[in-house]
Image 1 (tube, rainbow, N blue to C red):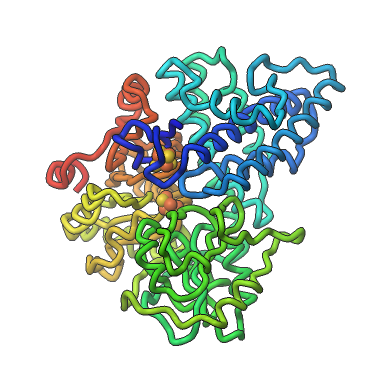
Image 2: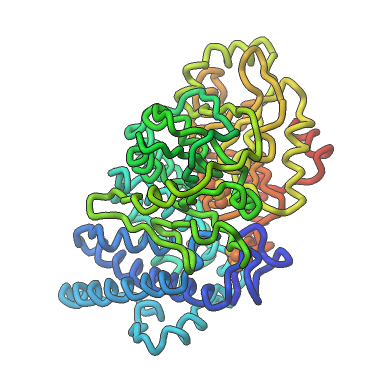
Length: 544
Ligand code: SF4
Ligand code: SF3
């Protein structure tokens, strides 16, 4: 196996024996195979669309689901991955027939040529690894693009489930898949494609923002309980708001409480979700602490997206975990989406009835809900604080959390920032500092949480608004620094989106991605001032 897609990759270069995340070599092979099928399907579909063929939702959904399933910590279930390969091959055959009927000549590449015989799955999976591309810089560009597409697919899936689709985004994704599949793509072409990926990253985050806010209202300032109640509970993790909406509706009046975990915390900020009294609180911290924290929850746990951590063999909760959407874990029950787009959580609810209430692991409250609309509602106060000098600076600290000790940097950074600096956050990165007593500035909390990682979009919207209010010529003239923590591939699309908006001098950490080659890094440094973190003291001089 070879996988270098996340920040925790072995030795900072690539997992070759087994994933640090727990991914086994077989699973890695089936993911490589699935990705090669997606590249094949994407390439053929792109040619068809270019020749005037109609969009096909079945193909769109396959591309989205397959890319999403290969995101770090999303799916560890070989059978589920192979079923997706089967689906992809059936789609590919159908598209090849349509292309033949239209007399279309298709690009000549392995992904299009491969016949898809089951007997060849293993050999093809072994051949189609990241290392199939020999040139380091071309490989780097192609992989960065596909990792951005994975993040884009995750956000697109959530938006589509809420009824918001965008044919332009899908068309771009097929163009990008065809681009990275081509054996003839040049460095210049791929670099252009990479930057365009960021532009569509903005579009997909805007689409999801529209989907979430039109379904559940605009996030609003909310205090979230981090303690527990006395009734049995269901813990729901991941990013899919449609799923928690279904769960809240189905658990209402049953005597069972619902708790959010990890990236589901922002569900509490949405009016149409926070209205449920039995949405009791947020349990635990970021994804990587789940093994310890789930052991105390006592009730069923539902994963709607990544990040899953493989349980230890003696885990007391292993029989109580369910997955949905693109996620999967061998031995855990999968809850399918019904034809009407909803899920039936009755088995989860029935299980909860027989469980004890959660054990309290923390006590208190956290505050969030500062997506763009709420920040604009406070705009006068914020602008006044900036003008009076009470707020001197903003630091965007969005992104992911992870288990590396070096990430304590972010806690320390937040603690060390001068008292006139406000932290703008989103994603699970916030768990490094959202429970610290960092205080407020004239009633404005010093940590403003917009929501999930995709809600980094809110900070782009806020930055553009500030630019307008203060009449700044350039977004980079504003007193805003970007200190982004990354782990998995949604952070890749967030980063590419920020670059496409013209944001310069972004610091990403705790380490630079292994998939960025030295030459590609040089281009990003020279063009965008992209860099990594150093020590808190040193970085305070630049960003504090
Ligand atoms: Fe390694 Fe990360 Fe890939 Fe898992 S996702 S195999 S930890 S690089
Ligand atoms: Fe976290 Fe997995 Fe990335 Fe949505 S839950 S930010 S790491």
